Length: 316
Image 1 (tube, rainbow, N blue to C red):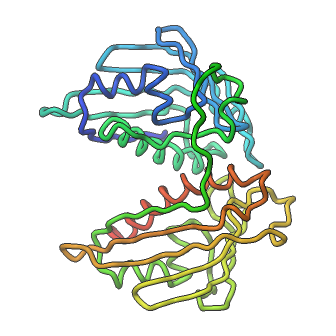
Image 2: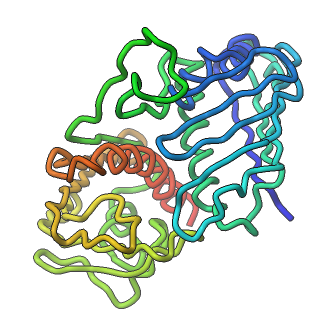
Image 3: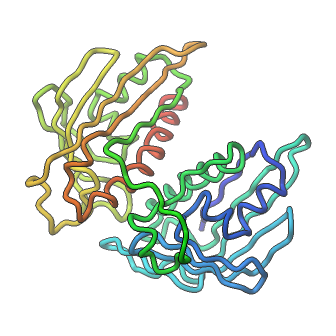
């Protein structure tokens, strides 16, 4: 059965990429700041993401060429998913010079297959964090998971600097090689939107003052209902709607909370492309006990969703 695999070209030397994958500082720079990692073969590396964690045995360290891990411990707190699905899976990072000054990186997560309940969530997560790795090795700054209180995190060393707290807004943008009309259709036709976003919006419509709702279709997340109330539509330019961010707990009545505001804007870009911007604001009104986790989940989620709409606009 097909497992997760991705190949990416990085504008960084194999030595730089290897350091990002094999040192504690490197792993904290792009994956999670709550990471404790040995830097020797046979050691352990533990990666924490709030209540979730994964522990890897470091099976192979071949400088500039390969890093290989086996997951020996895991805990994932997501309804409907076994907490230890990663245990026994292996992750290989293989590096090769690209013939110039960069690196071709091949990633394989053997055992992470569509048969697992966490497949869609974890596939999306890998895509997001590999993007963070690319930013880290090419620009010196990644987008790792940041704990709400790094000083209280179990694995943090005394004296480490405080990480930045979640702010009130998330802003993302992407240039899509497709005409504005094509992108606009994917944003404002509810059924077309659902196909790339991962929600069944059959028979729904986006219209100012109206609610559109339907179940999320991604494996492991089907207990979540996508629901937005459209606030404003300016043809070919702007769409705004309110929703409740990260409504992952079926036992919580999110209707009692203040929603956030999601604003999409479109602009023409060179060569017939379209610049898409999304801003989600209002996280300061989300209840404190879940504010940071909602901000973290949606920060990663918007990265993935912009990539989804790009792929649909450019290929379908």
